Amino acid sequence: MTTQETTIKDQIRQFVNDELAAAKGVTVTSDDESLIDNGVVDSLGIFRLVTFLEENFGVKVGDEEISAENLQSVNVIEQLVLSKAKKK
Amino acid sequence: MAYILQQLLSKSAARFPEKTAVWARGRSLSYRELDERSNQLAQLLVESGVRKGDRVGLFFPKCVESLISIFAVLKAGGVYVPLDPQAPVDRVGYIISNCGIRVLITQEEKRRALDAATRESLDRCVVVGEAKESTTRESSNGSGVVPWSALAQFPASRGPAVSVIETDLAYILYTSGSTGRPKGVMLTHQNALTFVEWCAEKFHVTSEDRLSNHAPLHFDLSVFDVYNAMEAGATVYLVTEEIALFPTTLQKFIETHQITVWYSVPSALVLLLLHADLKAERLPHLRTILFAGEVFPMKYLKQLSELLPAVELDNLYGPTETNVCTYYRVDRERLAGMDKLPIGIACENTEVFAVNDQDQIVTKPGESGELYVRGPAVTYGYWGDEEKTKKMVVANRFQKNFEEKMYRTGDLVTLAEDGNYYFVGRRDSMIKSRGYRIELGEIESALLSHPGVREAAAIAVPDEVVGNRIKAFVAAHERESLLAAELQHHCGTRIPKYMIPEFIEFRESLPKTSTGKVDRVGLARESQPVTV
Image (tube, rainbow over all chains, first blue to last red; front, top):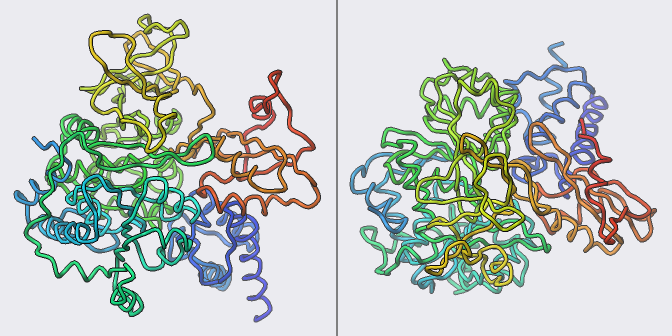
Protein backbone atom coordinates (compact mmCIF):
# COMPACT_ATOMS: atom_id res chain seq x y z
CA MET A 1 0.00 0.00 0.00
CA THR A 2 2.80 2.39 0.91
CA THR A 3 4.57 1.93 -2.39
CA GLN A 4 1.34 2.37 -4.30
CA GLU A 5 0.57 5.62 -2.45
CA THR A 6 4.03 6.93 -3.15
CA THR A 7 3.64 6.09 -6.80
CA ILE A 8 0.32 7.87 -7.13
CA LYS A 9 1.62 10.97 -5.39
CA ASP A 10 4.81 10.94 -7.47
CA GLN A 11 2.82 10.71 -10.67
CA ILE A 12 0.53 13.55 -9.62
CA ARG A 13 3.47 15.69 -8.59
CA GLN A 14 5.24 14.96 -11.86
CA PHE A 15 2.18 15.82 -13.96
CA VAL A 16 1.57 19.02 -12.00
CA ASN A 17 5.17 20.13 -12.40
CA ASP A 18 5.81 19.04 -15.98
CA GLU A 19 2.46 19.72 -17.57
CA LEU A 20 1.02 22.60 -15.55
CA ALA A 21 3.60 24.43 -13.46
CA ALA A 22 6.33 24.49 -16.13
CA ALA A 23 4.14 26.33 -18.63
CA LYS A 24 3.44 28.93 -15.91
CA GLY A 25 7.11 29.38 -15.23
CA VAL A 26 6.98 27.99 -11.68
CA THR A 27 7.94 24.85 -9.77
CA VAL A 28 5.81 23.26 -7.09
CA THR A 29 8.16 22.48 -4.21
CA SER A 30 5.75 21.26 -1.53
CA ASP A 31 2.93 18.73 -1.73
CA ASP A 32 0.87 21.04 0.47
CA GLU A 33 1.43 24.12 -1.67
CA SER A 34 -1.80 25.63 -3.03
CA LEU A 35 -1.93 25.23 -6.80
CA ILE A 36 -4.60 27.94 -6.86
CA ASP A 37 -2.84 30.66 -4.86
CA ASN A 38 0.41 30.22 -6.78
CA GLY A 39 -1.34 30.29 -10.15
CA VAL A 40 -0.23 26.80 -11.28
CA VAL A 41 -3.72 25.87 -12.45
CA ASP A 42 -5.88 28.06 -14.65
CA SER A 43 -9.34 27.31 -15.96
CA LEU A 44 -8.02 24.99 -18.68
CA GLY A 45 -5.37 23.43 -16.45
CA ILE A 46 -8.04 22.21 -14.02
CA PHE A 47 -9.64 20.12 -16.75
CA ARG A 48 -6.33 18.81 -18.03
CA LEU A 49 -5.58 17.71 -14.49
CA VAL A 50 -8.94 15.95 -14.20
CA THR A 51 -8.44 14.21 -17.55
CA PHE A 52 -5.01 13.06 -16.37
CA LEU A 53 -6.46 11.62 -13.14
CA GLU A 54 -9.22 9.82 -15.02
CA GLU A 55 -6.93 8.36 -17.67
CA ASN A 56 -4.04 7.43 -15.38
CA PHE A 57 -5.82 6.12 -12.34
CA GLY A 58 -9.05 4.88 -13.93
CA VAL A 59 -11.22 7.01 -11.67
CA LYS A 60 -14.22 9.14 -12.63
CA VAL A 61 -14.29 12.73 -11.37
CA GLY A 62 -17.73 14.30 -11.66
CA ASP A 63 -18.23 18.00 -12.44
CA GLU A 64 -19.52 18.42 -8.87
CA GLU A 65 -16.22 17.13 -7.50
CA ILE A 66 -14.09 19.56 -9.48
CA SER A 67 -13.58 21.99 -6.63
CA ALA A 68 -10.87 23.68 -4.60
CA GLU A 69 -11.52 21.25 -1.71
CA ASN A 70 -10.60 18.26 -3.89
CA LEU A 71 -7.88 19.68 -6.11
CA GLN A 72 -5.99 22.40 -4.32
CA SER A 73 -2.69 20.64 -3.64
CA VAL A 74 -0.77 17.49 -4.58
CA ASN A 75 -1.65 15.93 -1.19
CA VAL A 76 -5.35 16.75 -1.56
CA ILE A 77 -5.47 15.37 -5.11
CA GLU A 78 -3.82 12.14 -3.91
CA GLN A 79 -6.51 11.80 -1.23
CA LEU A 80 -9.20 12.21 -3.87
CA VAL A 81 -7.68 9.49 -6.05
CA LEU A 82 -7.17 7.12 -3.11
CA SER A 83 -10.71 7.58 -1.81
CA LYS A 84 -12.08 6.85 -5.28
CA ALA A 85 -9.83 3.83 -5.82
CA LYS A 86 -11.07 2.33 -2.53
CA LYS A 87 -14.70 2.69 -3.56
CA LYS A 88 -14.16 0.76 -6.76
CA MET B 1 -25.13 64.03 -9.28
CA ALA B 2 -21.78 62.66 -8.15
CA TYR B 3 -18.74 64.17 -9.88
CA ILE B 4 -16.06 62.17 -8.06
CA LEU B 5 -16.17 58.43 -7.37
CA GLN B 6 -16.05 58.54 -3.55
CA GLN B 7 -19.34 60.46 -3.55
CA LEU B 8 -21.03 57.28 -4.77
CA LEU B 9 -20.07 55.61 -1.50
CA SER B 10 -20.86 58.54 0.80
CA LYS B 11 -24.30 58.99 -0.75
CA SER B 12 -25.20 55.32 -0.40
CA ALA B 13 -23.76 55.22 3.13
CA ALA B 14 -26.14 58.04 4.06
CA ARG B 15 -29.15 56.34 2.43
CA PHE B 16 -28.47 52.69 3.32
CA PRO B 17 -26.05 52.65 6.30
CA GLU B 18 -26.88 49.10 7.40
CA LYS B 19 -27.15 47.51 3.97
CA THR B 20 -24.37 45.15 2.90
CA ALA B 21 -22.03 46.92 0.49
CA VAL B 22 -19.51 44.18 -0.18
CA TRP B 23 -19.05 40.47 0.48
CA ALA B 24 -15.87 38.44 -0.02
CA ARG B 25 -14.42 35.25 1.44
CA GLY B 26 -17.28 34.87 3.92
CA ARG B 27 -16.94 38.41 5.30
CA SER B 28 -19.05 41.45 4.55
CA LEU B 29 -19.17 45.17 5.29
CA SER B 30 -22.20 47.42 5.54
CA TYR B 31 -22.18 50.76 3.75
CA ARG B 32 -21.55 52.49 7.10
CA GLU B 33 -18.60 50.22 7.87
CA LEU B 34 -17.10 50.65 4.40
CA ASP B 35 -17.45 54.43 4.66
CA GLU B 36 -15.95 54.56 8.18
CA ARG B 37 -13.05 52.17 7.54
CA SER B 38 -12.14 54.02 4.35
CA ASN B 39 -12.29 57.35 6.24
CA GLN B 40 -9.82 55.95 8.76
CA LEU B 41 -7.49 54.46 6.19
CA ALA B 42 -7.61 57.70 4.19
CA GLN B 43 -6.34 59.59 7.23
CA LEU B 44 -3.62 57.03 7.78
CA LEU B 45 -2.59 57.48 4.13
CA VAL B 46 -2.44 61.25 4.52
CA GLU B 47 -0.40 60.81 7.69
CA SER B 48 1.86 58.51 5.64
CA GLY B 49 2.55 61.35 3.24
CA VAL B 50 -0.04 60.74 0.50
CA ARG B 51 -0.98 64.03 -1.14
CA LYS B 52 -3.37 64.90 -3.96
CA GLY B 53 -2.42 63.04 -7.13
CA ASP B 54 0.00 60.62 -5.42
CA ARG B 55 -0.14 57.02 -6.60
CA VAL B 56 -0.90 54.34 -4.02
CA GLY B 57 -0.46 50.66 -4.93
CA LEU B 58 -2.90 47.90 -3.92
CA PHE B 59 -1.07 44.58 -3.87
CA PHE B 60 -3.06 41.76 -2.26
CA PRO B 61 -5.70 39.21 -3.29
CA LYS B 62 -9.31 40.41 -3.49
CA CYS B 63 -11.07 40.78 -0.14
CA VAL B 64 -13.34 43.32 1.55
CA GLU B 65 -10.23 45.39 2.35
CA SER B 66 -9.82 45.91 -1.42
CA LEU B 67 -12.87 48.19 -1.41
CA ILE B 68 -11.81 49.93 1.81
CA SER B 69 -8.44 50.62 0.16
CA ILE B 70 -9.88 51.87 -3.14
CA PHE B 71 -12.13 54.39 -1.41
CA ALA B 72 -9.47 55.36 1.14
CA VAL B 73 -7.00 56.25 -1.62
CA LEU B 74 -9.67 58.32 -3.43
CA LYS B 75 -10.70 60.07 -0.20
CA ALA B 76 -7.06 60.94 0.45
CA GLY B 77 -7.01 62.58 -3.00
CA GLY B 78 -4.72 59.86 -4.32
CA VAL B 79 -4.69 57.68 -7.40
CA TYR B 80 -4.94 53.94 -6.81
CA VAL B 81 -2.96 51.44 -8.82
CA PRO B 82 -4.27 47.86 -8.53
CA LEU B 83 -1.37 45.42 -8.94
CA ASP B 84 -1.96 41.84 -10.04
CA PRO B 85 -1.29 39.80 -6.86
CA GLN B 86 -0.04 36.92 -9.03
CA ALA B 87 2.26 38.97 -11.26
CA PRO B 88 6.00 38.34 -11.16
CA VAL B 89 7.95 40.44 -8.66
CA ASP B 90 9.94 42.01 -11.50
CA ARG B 91 6.80 43.34 -13.18
CA VAL B 92 5.29 44.63 -9.92
CA GLY B 93 8.60 46.32 -9.13
CA TYR B 94 8.61 47.92 -12.57
CA ILE B 95 5.09 49.33 -12.13
CA ILE B 96 5.87 50.63 -8.61
CA SER B 97 8.89 52.47 -9.95
CA ASN B 98 7.22 53.53 -13.25
CA CYS B 99 4.43 55.49 -11.60
CA GLY B 100 6.36 56.41 -8.48
CA ILE B 101 4.38 54.56 -5.83
CA ARG B 102 5.72 55.47 -2.36
CA VAL B 103 2.90 54.03 -0.28
CA LEU B 104 1.70 50.47 -0.77
CA ILE B 105 -1.27 48.66 0.75
CA THR B 106 -0.32 45.00 0.81
CA GLN B 107 -0.08 41.75 2.75
CA GLU B 108 2.96 40.86 4.82
CA GLU B 109 3.68 37.84 2.60
CA LYS B 110 3.41 39.93 -0.58
CA ARG B 111 5.58 42.69 0.88
CA ARG B 112 8.31 40.21 1.74
CA ALA B 113 8.22 38.79 -1.78
CA LEU B 114 9.13 42.18 -3.32
CA ASP B 115 12.76 42.68 -4.26
CA ALA B 116 14.91 44.66 -1.84
CA ALA B 117 15.25 47.70 -4.12
CA THR B 118 11.46 47.99 -4.48
CA ARG B 119 10.93 47.58 -0.72
CA GLU B 120 13.47 50.28 -0.03
CA SER B 121 11.84 52.64 -2.53
CA LEU B 122 8.62 52.62 -0.48
CA ASP B 123 8.07 55.11 2.32
CA ARG B 124 5.31 53.10 3.89
CA CYS B 125 3.49 49.78 3.63
CA VAL B 126 0.08 49.37 5.21
CA VAL B 127 -0.33 45.67 5.88
CA VAL B 128 -3.76 44.09 5.44
CA GLY B 129 -4.76 41.31 7.82
CA GLU B 130 -4.04 40.28 11.38
CA ALA B 131 -0.86 41.90 12.63
CA LYS B 132 1.98 39.47 13.09
CA GLU B 133 4.49 40.12 15.83
CA SER B 134 7.23 40.92 13.32
CA THR B 135 5.08 43.57 11.60
CA THR B 136 4.34 45.28 14.90
CA ARG B 137 7.99 45.19 15.86
CA GLU B 138 9.15 46.64 12.55
CA SER B 139 6.58 49.42 12.68
CA SER B 140 7.64 50.37 16.18
CA ASN B 141 11.17 50.63 14.81
CA GLY B 142 9.88 53.23 12.40
CA SER B 143 10.72 51.24 9.27
CA GLY B 144 7.51 52.20 7.53
CA VAL B 145 5.45 49.03 7.94
CA VAL B 146 2.10 49.79 9.53
CA PRO B 147 -0.38 47.12 10.65
CA TRP B 148 -4.06 47.36 9.68
CA SER B 149 -4.90 47.79 13.37
CA ALA B 150 -3.43 51.30 13.17
CA LEU B 151 -6.66 52.43 11.49
CA ALA B 152 -8.37 52.40 14.88
CA GLN B 153 -6.52 55.48 16.08
CA PHE B 154 -8.24 57.71 13.49
CA PRO B 155 -11.77 59.10 13.79
CA ALA B 156 -14.25 57.15 11.65
CA SER B 157 -16.79 59.85 11.01
CA ARG B 158 -14.96 61.84 8.37
CA GLY B 159 -12.20 61.56 5.80
CA PRO B 160 -9.37 64.01 5.19
CA ALA B 161 -10.24 67.44 3.77
CA VAL B 162 -8.88 67.23 0.23
CA SER B 163 -10.40 68.94 -2.76
CA VAL B 164 -10.61 66.75 -5.85
CA ILE B 165 -12.37 67.53 -9.13
CA GLU B 166 -13.66 65.26 -11.85
CA THR B 167 -10.72 65.78 -14.16
CA ASP B 168 -8.25 64.54 -11.51
CA LEU B 169 -6.90 61.03 -11.88
CA ALA B 170 -8.69 58.29 -9.92
CA TYR B 171 -6.76 55.16 -10.90
CA ILE B 172 -4.14 53.77 -13.26
CA LEU B 173 -4.58 50.37 -14.88
CA TYR B 174 -1.48 48.68 -16.28
CA THR B 175 -1.89 46.70 -19.46
CA SER B 176 0.47 44.80 -21.74
CA GLY B 177 2.90 46.96 -23.72
CA SER B 178 4.30 46.07 -27.14
CA THR B 179 7.83 47.24 -26.32
CA GLY B 180 8.31 44.75 -23.52
CA ARG B 181 7.01 46.66 -20.50
CA PRO B 182 3.43 47.24 -19.32
CA LYS B 183 1.90 50.67 -19.80
CA GLY B 184 -0.26 52.55 -17.30
CA VAL B 185 -3.60 53.82 -18.61
CA MET B 186 -4.57 56.95 -16.62
CA LEU B 187 -8.26 57.23 -15.83
CA THR B 188 -10.00 60.20 -14.24
CA HIS B 189 -13.09 60.33 -12.04
CA GLN B 190 -14.95 61.69 -15.04
CA ASN B 191 -13.78 58.85 -17.29
CA ALA B 192 -15.14 56.28 -14.83
CA LEU B 193 -18.34 58.15 -13.98
CA THR B 194 -19.25 58.61 -17.64
CA PHE B 195 -19.40 54.84 -17.89
CA VAL B 196 -20.94 54.23 -14.45
CA GLU B 197 -23.78 56.69 -15.06
CA TRP B 198 -24.49 55.21 -18.47
CA CYS B 199 -24.63 51.70 -16.94
CA ALA B 200 -26.84 52.81 -14.06
CA GLU B 201 -29.43 54.01 -16.54
CA LYS B 202 -29.01 51.33 -19.18
CA PHE B 203 -29.09 48.36 -16.81
CA HIS B 204 -31.36 49.88 -14.13
CA VAL B 205 -29.15 48.86 -11.23
CA THR B 206 -31.06 49.37 -7.94
CA SER B 207 -30.38 48.90 -4.22
CA GLU B 208 -32.09 45.51 -4.51
CA ASP B 209 -29.47 44.23 -6.94
CA ARG B 210 -26.68 41.81 -6.11
CA LEU B 211 -23.73 42.21 -8.46
CA SER B 212 -20.91 39.75 -8.98
CA ASN B 213 -17.32 40.86 -9.37
CA HIS B 214 -15.59 38.22 -11.45
CA ALA B 215 -12.81 40.29 -13.03
CA PRO B 216 -9.62 41.05 -11.11
CA LEU B 217 -9.43 44.62 -9.81
CA HIS B 218 -6.56 45.49 -12.18
CA PHE B 219 -8.92 44.67 -15.07
CA ASP B 220 -11.36 47.42 -16.09
CA LEU B 221 -14.44 45.17 -16.06
CA SER B 222 -14.34 45.55 -12.27
CA VAL B 223 -15.17 49.27 -12.60
CA PHE B 224 -18.81 48.40 -13.31
CA ASP B 225 -19.06 45.87 -10.47
CA VAL B 226 -17.58 48.09 -7.78
CA TYR B 227 -18.91 51.52 -8.70
CA ASN B 228 -22.32 50.59 -10.04
CA ALA B 229 -22.96 48.65 -6.83
CA MET B 230 -21.95 51.73 -4.83
CA GLU B 231 -23.94 54.07 -7.06
CA ALA B 232 -27.14 52.12 -6.50
CA GLY B 233 -26.63 51.04 -2.90
CA ALA B 234 -26.50 47.44 -4.12
CA THR B 235 -24.22 44.64 -2.87
CA VAL B 236 -21.13 43.46 -4.73
CA TYR B 237 -19.94 39.86 -4.21
CA LEU B 238 -16.27 39.37 -5.01
CA VAL B 239 -15.43 36.13 -6.83
CA THR B 240 -12.03 34.87 -5.67
CA GLU B 241 -9.78 32.38 -7.51
CA GLU B 242 -10.88 29.29 -5.57
CA ILE B 243 -14.42 30.01 -6.79
CA ALA B 244 -13.66 31.32 -10.29
CA LEU B 245 -11.60 28.31 -11.36
CA PHE B 246 -14.29 25.74 -10.59
CA PRO B 247 -17.50 25.98 -12.67
CA THR B 248 -19.69 24.04 -10.23
CA THR B 249 -18.48 26.13 -7.30
CA LEU B 250 -19.02 29.28 -9.35
CA GLN B 251 -22.56 28.29 -10.24
CA LYS B 252 -23.30 27.62 -6.54
CA PHE B 253 -21.88 31.06 -5.75
CA ILE B 254 -24.32 32.68 -8.20
CA GLU B 255 -27.20 30.66 -6.73
CA THR B 256 -26.34 31.17 -3.06
CA HIS B 257 -25.82 34.90 -3.32
CA GLN B 258 -28.79 35.28 -5.65
CA ILE B 259 -26.72 37.30 -8.08
CA THR B 260 -28.96 39.49 -10.25
CA VAL B 261 -26.39 41.11 -12.56
CA TRP B 262 -23.36 39.19 -13.80
CA TYR B 263 -20.43 40.72 -15.69
CA SER B 264 -17.41 38.79 -16.95
CA VAL B 265 -15.36 37.80 -19.96
CA PRO B 266 -17.18 35.32 -22.25
CA SER B 267 -14.72 32.51 -21.44
CA ALA B 268 -15.95 32.42 -17.82
CA LEU B 269 -19.49 31.92 -19.12
CA VAL B 270 -18.38 29.26 -21.61
CA LEU B 271 -16.79 27.27 -18.76
CA LEU B 272 -20.07 27.49 -16.84
CA LEU B 273 -21.92 26.27 -19.92
CA LEU B 274 -19.58 23.35 -20.47
CA HIS B 275 -18.98 22.18 -16.91
CA ALA B 276 -21.76 23.43 -14.66
CA ASP B 277 -25.51 22.94 -14.72
CA LEU B 278 -26.81 26.27 -16.00
CA LYS B 279 -30.59 26.22 -15.84
CA ALA B 280 -33.11 29.00 -15.57
CA GLU B 281 -34.83 27.34 -12.60
CA ARG B 282 -31.58 27.21 -10.65
CA LEU B 283 -30.88 30.90 -11.26
CA PRO B 284 -34.26 32.60 -10.77
CA HIS B 285 -32.72 35.88 -9.57
CA LEU B 286 -30.31 36.39 -12.45
CA ARG B 287 -31.74 39.07 -14.75
CA THR B 288 -28.81 40.49 -16.72
CA ILE B 289 -25.56 39.11 -18.06
CA LEU B 290 -23.00 41.56 -19.37
CA PHE B 291 -19.89 40.35 -21.13
CA ALA B 292 -16.83 42.07 -22.57
CA GLY B 293 -13.15 41.68 -23.22
CA GLU B 294 -13.22 39.25 -26.13
CA VAL B 295 -15.42 37.87 -28.88
CA PHE B 296 -18.16 35.54 -27.61
CA PRO B 297 -18.16 32.36 -29.78
CA MET B 298 -21.63 32.34 -31.39
CA LYS B 299 -22.19 28.64 -30.76
CA TYR B 300 -21.92 29.16 -27.02
CA LEU B 301 -23.81 32.42 -26.96
CA LYS B 302 -26.76 30.70 -28.63
CA GLN B 303 -26.64 27.93 -26.01
CA LEU B 304 -26.52 30.47 -23.20
CA SER B 305 -29.45 32.33 -24.67
CA GLU B 306 -31.52 29.13 -24.88
CA LEU B 307 -30.67 27.98 -21.36
CA LEU B 308 -31.49 31.34 -19.80
CA PRO B 309 -34.30 32.68 -22.01
CA ALA B 310 -35.43 35.43 -19.63
CA VAL B 311 -31.99 36.86 -18.95
CA GLU B 312 -30.99 40.01 -20.83
CA LEU B 313 -27.64 39.59 -22.60
CA ASP B 314 -25.44 42.57 -23.47
CA ASN B 315 -22.14 42.63 -25.31
CA LEU B 316 -20.00 45.55 -24.09
CA TYR B 317 -16.98 46.63 -26.07
CA GLY B 318 -14.16 49.01 -25.34
CA PRO B 319 -10.45 49.14 -24.60
CA THR B 320 -9.31 50.17 -21.09
CA GLU B 321 -8.49 53.59 -22.56
CA THR B 322 -12.23 54.28 -23.00
CA ASN B 323 -13.65 51.71 -20.54
CA VAL B 324 -16.70 50.77 -22.62
CA CYS B 325 -17.57 52.71 -25.76
CA THR B 326 -20.09 50.56 -27.64
CA TYR B 327 -22.68 47.96 -26.69
CA TYR B 328 -25.04 45.53 -28.34
CA ARG B 329 -28.12 44.14 -26.62
CA VAL B 330 -28.64 40.60 -27.88
CA ASP B 331 -31.78 40.42 -29.98
CA ARG B 332 -33.07 36.87 -29.45
CA GLU B 333 -35.22 36.91 -32.55
CA ARG B 334 -32.19 37.64 -34.71
CA LEU B 335 -29.70 35.53 -32.77
CA ALA B 336 -30.47 32.17 -34.40
CA GLY B 337 -29.70 33.54 -37.85
CA MET B 338 -26.57 35.43 -36.83
CA ASP B 339 -23.08 34.12 -37.44
CA LYS B 340 -21.25 37.02 -35.85
CA LEU B 341 -22.09 39.24 -32.90
CA PRO B 342 -21.86 43.01 -33.41
CA ILE B 343 -20.01 45.26 -30.96
CA GLY B 344 -23.00 47.50 -31.55
CA ILE B 345 -23.46 51.23 -31.31
CA ALA B 346 -21.90 53.97 -29.19
CA CYS B 347 -22.87 54.33 -25.54
CA GLU B 348 -24.65 57.60 -24.75
CA ASN B 349 -22.25 60.50 -24.15
CA THR B 350 -19.59 58.78 -26.26
CA GLU B 351 -19.06 59.04 -30.00
CA VAL B 352 -17.37 56.40 -32.12
CA PHE B 353 -16.56 56.35 -35.82
CA ALA B 354 -14.46 54.30 -38.19
CA VAL B 355 -11.74 55.93 -40.28
CA ASN B 356 -10.79 54.27 -43.56
CA ASP B 357 -7.40 54.09 -45.31
CA GLN B 358 -8.16 57.35 -47.15
CA ASP B 359 -8.50 59.02 -43.74
CA GLN B 360 -12.22 59.54 -44.17
CA ILE B 361 -14.97 58.74 -41.72
CA VAL B 362 -16.84 55.61 -42.80
CA THR B 363 -20.48 56.36 -43.50
CA LYS B 364 -21.57 53.65 -45.93
CA PRO B 365 -22.65 50.21 -44.73
CA GLY B 366 -20.15 47.52 -45.63
CA GLU B 367 -17.16 49.83 -45.33
CA SER B 368 -14.36 49.16 -42.84
CA GLY B 369 -11.89 51.27 -40.92
CA GLU B 370 -10.13 51.79 -37.62
CA LEU B 371 -12.44 52.66 -34.74
CA TYR B 372 -11.91 56.05 -33.05
CA VAL B 373 -13.54 57.18 -29.81
CA ARG B 374 -14.22 60.70 -28.52
CA GLY B 375 -15.93 61.93 -25.39
CA PRO B 376 -15.53 62.20 -21.61
CA ALA B 377 -14.70 58.48 -21.21
CA VAL B 378 -11.42 58.76 -23.12
CA THR B 379 -8.12 58.55 -21.18
CA TYR B 380 -5.50 61.31 -21.02
CA GLY B 381 -2.99 58.65 -22.08
CA TYR B 382 -0.24 56.53 -20.57
CA TRP B 383 1.58 57.38 -17.36
CA GLY B 384 5.02 58.76 -18.09
CA ASP B 385 4.92 57.76 -21.75
CA GLU B 386 4.44 60.83 -23.87
CA GLU B 387 5.48 59.09 -27.06
CA LYS B 388 2.93 56.30 -26.77
CA THR B 389 0.27 58.78 -25.66
CA LYS B 390 0.87 60.97 -28.73
CA LYS B 391 0.48 57.96 -30.97
CA MET B 392 -2.82 56.75 -29.52
CA VAL B 393 -4.57 59.79 -28.04
CA VAL B 394 -4.59 62.17 -30.98
CA ALA B 395 -6.05 65.55 -31.93
CA ASN B 396 -9.48 65.26 -33.52
CA ARG B 397 -8.68 66.28 -37.09
CA PHE B 398 -12.26 65.86 -38.22
CA GLN B 399 -13.43 69.05 -36.58
CA LYS B 400 -11.55 72.34 -36.58
CA ASN B 401 -13.46 74.58 -34.17
CA PHE B 402 -11.81 73.65 -30.91
CA GLU B 403 -9.00 71.45 -29.63
CA GLU B 404 -10.03 68.01 -28.63
CA LYS B 405 -8.46 64.57 -28.27
CA MET B 406 -9.73 61.25 -29.51
CA TYR B 407 -8.50 57.71 -28.98
CA ARG B 408 -7.57 55.41 -31.83
CA THR B 409 -8.39 51.89 -30.74
CA GLY B 410 -6.29 49.97 -33.27
CA ASP B 411 -9.40 47.82 -33.79
CA LEU B 412 -10.65 47.38 -37.34
CA VAL B 413 -14.43 47.43 -37.63
CA THR B 414 -17.10 47.26 -40.32
CA LEU B 415 -20.23 49.38 -40.33
CA ALA B 416 -23.33 47.26 -41.01
CA GLU B 417 -26.65 48.11 -42.66
CA ASP B 418 -28.43 48.30 -39.29
CA GLY B 419 -25.95 50.86 -37.94
CA ASN B 420 -24.05 48.37 -35.77
CA TYR B 421 -20.29 48.03 -35.89
CA TYR B 422 -18.65 44.62 -36.16
CA PHE B 423 -15.15 43.87 -34.93
CA VAL B 424 -12.95 42.54 -37.75
CA GLY B 425 -9.42 42.41 -36.35
CA ARG B 426 -6.43 44.35 -35.10
CA ARG B 427 -4.08 46.77 -36.82
CA ASP B 428 -1.20 45.52 -34.69
CA SER B 429 -0.18 42.35 -32.88
CA MET B 430 -2.29 42.73 -29.77
CA ILE B 431 -4.35 39.63 -28.97
CA LYS B 432 -6.88 38.62 -26.33
CA SER B 433 -6.81 35.55 -24.13
CA ARG B 434 -9.46 35.14 -21.41
CA GLY B 435 -10.21 38.80 -22.11
CA TYR B 436 -6.69 39.89 -21.17
CA ARG B 437 -4.92 42.18 -23.59
CA ILE B 438 -1.65 40.67 -24.62
CA GLU B 439 0.96 42.34 -26.80
CA LEU B 440 2.85 39.58 -28.59
CA GLY B 441 5.84 41.94 -28.64
CA GLU B 442 5.96 41.89 -24.84
CA ILE B 443 6.17 38.09 -24.87
CA GLU B 444 8.90 38.17 -27.54
CA SER B 445 10.82 40.70 -25.46
CA ALA B 446 10.65 38.37 -22.45
CA LEU B 447 11.90 35.44 -24.56
CA LEU B 448 14.67 37.51 -26.12
CA SER B 449 15.89 38.63 -22.71
CA HIS B 450 17.06 35.04 -22.14
CA PRO B 451 20.76 34.86 -23.09
CA GLY B 452 20.25 31.60 -25.02
CA VAL B 453 17.63 33.00 -27.39
CA ARG B 454 18.65 34.37 -30.78
CA GLU B 455 15.23 34.92 -32.37
CA ALA B 456 11.71 34.64 -30.99
CA ALA B 457 8.18 35.02 -32.29
CA ALA B 458 4.95 34.65 -30.36
CA ILE B 459 1.69 33.81 -32.08
CA ALA B 460 -1.91 33.33 -31.03
CA VAL B 461 -3.53 29.95 -31.57
CA PRO B 462 -7.33 30.38 -31.71
CA ASP B 463 -9.20 28.48 -28.99
CA GLU B 464 -12.95 28.08 -28.62
CA VAL B 465 -13.02 28.49 -24.85
CA VAL B 466 -10.39 31.06 -23.93
CA GLY B 467 -10.17 32.93 -27.25
CA ASN B 468 -6.48 32.38 -27.88
CA ARG B 469 -3.64 30.30 -26.52
CA ILE B 470 -0.04 31.33 -26.97
CA LYS B 471 2.67 29.54 -28.85
CA ALA B 472 6.23 30.69 -29.37
CA PHE B 473 8.83 29.86 -31.98
CA VAL B 474 12.40 30.19 -30.82
CA ALA B 475 15.76 29.97 -32.53
CA ALA B 476 18.42 29.39 -29.91
CA HIS B 477 22.12 30.17 -29.98
CA GLU B 478 22.85 26.58 -29.05
CA ARG B 479 19.77 24.44 -29.47
CA GLU B 480 20.90 21.52 -27.32
CA SER B 481 21.34 23.56 -24.19
CA LEU B 482 17.90 25.21 -24.13
CA LEU B 483 14.68 23.65 -22.83
CA ALA B 484 11.11 24.89 -23.22
CA ALA B 485 10.55 24.66 -19.45
CA GLU B 486 13.62 26.79 -18.80
CA LEU B 487 12.35 29.49 -21.16
CA GLN B 488 8.88 29.38 -19.63
CA HIS B 489 10.44 29.75 -16.21
CA HIS B 490 12.43 32.71 -17.46
CA CYS B 491 9.25 34.31 -18.87
CA GLY B 492 7.58 33.72 -15.50
CA THR B 493 10.00 36.17 -13.90
CA ARG B 494 9.03 38.93 -16.34
CA ILE B 495 5.44 38.56 -17.57
CA PRO B 496 2.14 37.41 -16.00
CA LYS B 497 1.24 33.73 -16.16
CA TYR B 498 -1.52 34.28 -18.71
CA MET B 499 1.10 35.62 -21.15
CA ILE B 500 3.64 32.80 -20.89
CA PRO B 501 3.67 30.68 -24.09
CA GLU B 502 2.04 27.33 -23.41
CA PHE B 503 3.88 25.76 -26.32
CA ILE B 504 7.42 26.47 -27.47
CA GLU B 505 8.77 25.12 -30.73
CA PHE B 506 12.47 25.34 -31.53
CA ARG B 507 13.64 26.15 -35.06
CA GLU B 508 17.07 26.60 -36.60
CA SER B 509 15.95 30.05 -37.69
CA LEU B 510 12.64 31.84 -38.06
CA PRO B 511 11.01 32.63 -41.43
CA LYS B 512 11.22 36.29 -42.51
CA THR B 513 8.96 38.54 -44.53
CA SER B 514 10.30 40.49 -47.52
CA THR B 515 11.08 43.39 -45.18
CA GLY B 516 13.22 41.16 -43.00
CA LYS B 517 10.82 40.94 -40.06
CA VAL B 518 9.90 37.63 -38.48
CA ASP B 519 6.91 36.28 -40.39
CA ARG B 520 4.35 35.89 -37.63
CA VAL B 521 1.51 35.46 -40.11
CA GLY B 522 3.26 32.58 -41.83
CA LEU B 523 4.04 30.91 -38.51
CA ALA B 524 0.44 31.33 -37.39
CA ARG B 525 -0.79 29.73 -40.62
CA GLU B 526 1.38 26.67 -39.91
CA SER B 527 -0.06 26.31 -36.44
CA GLN B 528 -3.43 24.66 -36.40
CA PRO B 529 -5.55 25.07 -33.27
CA VAL B 530 -4.07 22.98 -30.51
CA THR B 531 -6.10 20.26 -28.87
CA VAL B 532 -5.25 19.03 -25.41
